[in-house]
Length: 106
Length: 121
Image 1 (spheres, each protein chain N blue to C red):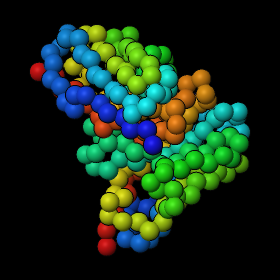
Image 2: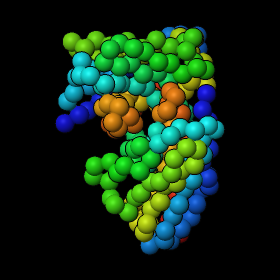
Image 3: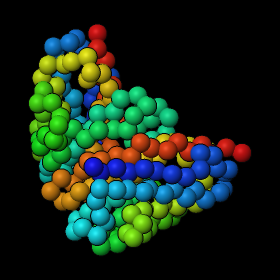
């Protein structure tokens, strides 16, 4: 099975900061990677698919990049509403999630 | 508007079988490349993919849970059913039903609200 490792596990940043979350796959997954945002008590929400495609309705401050085994999610200017846990997911071979990154606002 | 809604028991006893139903609207599982899947999340923990069924009735299961899971669909009722046998307290989680709209997206674009299942005697 393909394992997904996210870093960091938590991060604290100020409004307006540029934030980057990294996701590494245990083997190449081409660009078959998605990013989700989950707020407490809510279902996850799709942000990015195919590593860099922005889901409809998602603010343009979110972007994704990478291919193969290393991927990043970037929030260009952190907003208070972005406080959440973010998960990466591979779908090259079955489906596997990372362990999550909790983003807090300072 | 695409929606999915999970239903099932909130409490099951250890060793019992859990049956969850996903009732969806706004799309058809007869559409080429359409898929419905199940994901769970134990309290305070990460998401875990469980099973998937596609428009062609192909089924896929988590390697670690495949001996306990069965997924099926009833396209006439717009429903997907997941059964999990031999439930254990570690299976306590929120269970989500999700849609994959096709290979071009490939990811889980629409999620149900989730249903919390507690396993306890």
